[in-house]
Image (cartoon, rainbow, N blue to C red):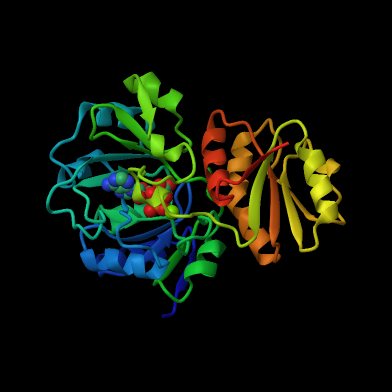
Amino acid sequence: MDTKFIKLPDPEGMRMAGRVIREGGLVAFPTETVYGLGGDAFDPEASAKIYAAKGRPSDNPLIVHIADMESLERLSSEIPEQLYALADSFWPGPLTMIVKKRPEVPDRTTGGLDTVAIRMPDHPAALELIREAGGYIAAPSANASGRPSPTLASHVLEDLGGRIEVILDGGEVGIGVESTIVDLTGEKIQILRPGYVTAQMLERVVGHVELDPAIAGPPAAGVRPKAPGMMYRHYAPKGDMMIVRGEGAADYICQKLGECSGKAAVLCCDESRDRYPAEKAVIKSLGSLQRPEEAALKLYRVLRELDSEGVSLIYSESFPDTGIGEALMNRMMKAAGYKVIEA
Ligand code: TXA
Ligand code: MG
């Protein structure tokens, strides 16, 4: 298949992309978090194509993206009050909410679950595409399954070129980690995936929220995360990655670099960058510790760079896990397969 690559803004290209989705095809598009791979959420065949293009297991449900509050009606007949309160504060924005679905929402889209995940993205091109496409776009992140999520259109081209109809290039995304997911179907509101919208931000609106206990650590026997996607080994760089934390982290990493034979890399911050020998390893800073937003935005891009540079071993420093740092460390721990060294 010939993938059309369209640089935005391009009003004619946008209309064409909307038409492609209405006719059952797939379009990758920018959002404020990461690039999404969109198809018509009410077309089970389109959802099947999304799974095939990504190489993603089909029991892993998709998020339905909408552009206005009226669109909720067709997705669910049981919308809790909290959804409206949270939408008031965080939509359009990086928050996905799970509610009971209507039977009309295809099982293919929700991975067979009786719930549906809904998000209104805060990106003008995403909102325009949703409207052009008829109001409902099912979209996972637009990476090949198992690779870091795309923060640039070129990442999408790398992973999905030749497998989808259109890529809309809106430049680099703003946030760089996927949306916060909250489950509103239980007695207590649960965070199934940490993101830019933190527990503290949610609690200011709806009171106490919990973190799905299954995602606090490595996948364990008998504990299933409620978001099926949190189970898979995601965001995995090709190199073997480990996180080194504690006072002695830099010394430990330097010593290991001296001993290792393959091509190694260090993920660090601006403050510590000069402590590592550039002749022994590829050194990548995620930016200043003072700016955790920047680290979140850079992480996936840097992991992809390490892949293309053929690095086989990655030592990463740990970052503060407050605010957006919680989502950052969640993704880093997954990339490292939860391998942590205390130094
Ligand atoms: O920021 C984002 O959320 C991006 C952009 C494109 O919007 N999308 C994204 O989608 O990250 P994806 O498919 O890569 O991740 C969706 C996660 C998966 O872990 C999936 O299992 C979970 O959401 N999910 C979707 N529907 C669900 C449901 N009904 N119940 C529980 N988890 C659900
Ligand atoms: Mg994803």
